[in-house]
Length: 144
Ligand SMILES: Nc1nc2c([nH]c(=O)n2[C@H]2C[C@H](O)[C@@H](COP(=O)(O)OP(=O)(O)OP(=O)(O)O)O2)c(=O)[nH]1
Image 1 (cartoon, rainbow, N blue to C red):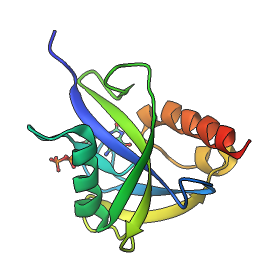
Image 2 (cartoon, rainbow, N blue to C red):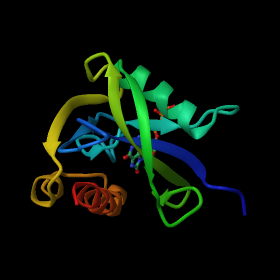
Image 3 (cartoon, helix red, strand yellow):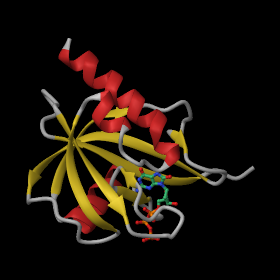
Image 4 (cartoon, rainbow, N blue to C red):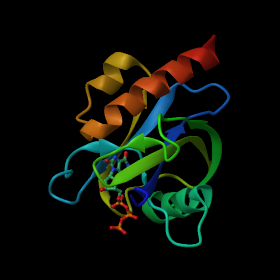
């Protein structure tokens, strides 16, 4: 069996050291995901590492330079299963230069409190919900 397509996503927080808010992005395409919230990111291109791909996607999609923190590890070597054909690795990240804007693939960005009620109220891409749970646990552990 061939490997799953590798996607990478960023859990961009206001501060890696002391995270309180998460930047979420609302997709515009394809139709099945339009209007749903996600972690900004995209496909890893041939010859790129996952981290290189993620920094490139954040530049293209949001117009920011970012610093990656810890990975939010999923159950697979390739991260989190998305559908039958793709999996996503997710890293915590913070913006080091630029102001995030929905330049490509998104029509809205929103800073949301890192709090279960606020995050779970969003219409996430369904495959992202377990990642949101893991992120909340990681953030709670950082705060302890
Ligand atoms: N970026 C991102 N993609 C996600 C998430 N959850 C999820 O199921 N996906 C799916 C949607 C897409 O099928 C795939 C990512 O593809 P993409 O369209 O964002 O990648 P890309 O920017 O490189 O795409 P493209 O313009 O080359 O078509 O992963 C998520 O949280 N973030």
